[in-house]
Image (cartoon, rainbow, N blue to C red; front, side):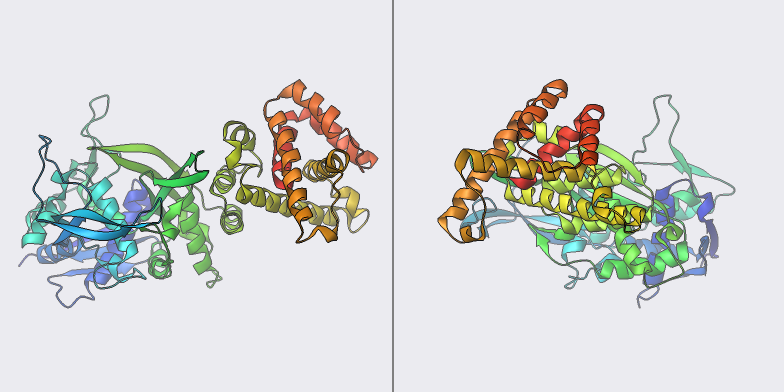
Length: 541
């Protein structure tokens, strides 16, 4: 029997967010491990505070802990195509099965052949228990985590040995090695492979090796249990069918940079247990994001909702920030598409929470979320998007138009309330007219006047539920689209001339201040006016 080893950790001394998340993962893992009746040896958290934790562990306890961390089983998995070895030769399956499936493109039911192969499945320790869809050892959230582990962190088969060996029986080599390293004196260093630390290499361009202190690297066995997994989606548009189809583009690993260890470890389990159970294809719908960095806002929003019940804490008390790493497996390579860090800003989180529930069109919502992340005006970036994207996806999409309409309604209410506060109730209507309000109003007036002069159509309640309503909406869309396409092909002086000669060709009921505001914006913020005009035409079309 070996003497227990005491490891003291302080968040402030740890070199990265992965290490700090690893300390939180270690605390949760040890607490869960000790609730299991088959635990062995000494393995306990003897001290836990907001700034750090102390672990007491012996060799048998470390082995027992690793057996939980790397627990796995051998199961049979159906694949749509036969596997091939390195020589491109087909690997014979255990058997073939014909299954009835629903085609995701046509929604038709058809029969398909699946090839059954043995596969090692990592269990996931306490994540199975915190999966709200858990059924035995399975659930949609733990499946997502397992997919990420096998595709990204253990994407190279040679790195799966701790799981593979334990699926067949007892394996102690990794625990023995770590035990010896932890017992070395001082700040003993070890190699730092990318299996444990994202982005690590054997050595950098200057031939300096990647190394870490042994007691710090020990924490990196646990950070993946605390990191949240999201799936960025890219949408492709088929003009022939006028349909959009989604495609996974890897995984977004959302790594919380823990500032208050004790409270974070209290709050994370209920956050995991309250995740949504609805599916999007075969993924949890809640895991689908429009941009990778959105995952950070989603995690902070959920923690923020929990903290609302604890008046004492804010999100910035629990997290220093959140790191997001976007990775995708392509063939035998793991591609790093990007990484970012999002600060825990309450206003940003609140705005994200509103945007994600308010808007339904993926194209519109994606740009709005990018603007939230970059703290930009809501309309920023839409000039490029509207100019380069197929018009069938923008002004031609009822969902896109509806979202733009809601955005203008929101900004109108916000500006009106702001004007009311500034004017203290005096002359509120004049004070609230910003460039956004004026352009939206002007475009609406232009479309109405154009319909009346060109098609002799003027909306009345009598049009409702009659052929006239269809005709009115059809012609209104045509007028808006013609102006939209004309503006899309014009910039700078050409746009100003078109705006003044065409959109302002009909009387506009603006006061002197409104005309002055619009004229100034047209010449000093031309791109802003151009963007807002295209958006207003989309909303009004």
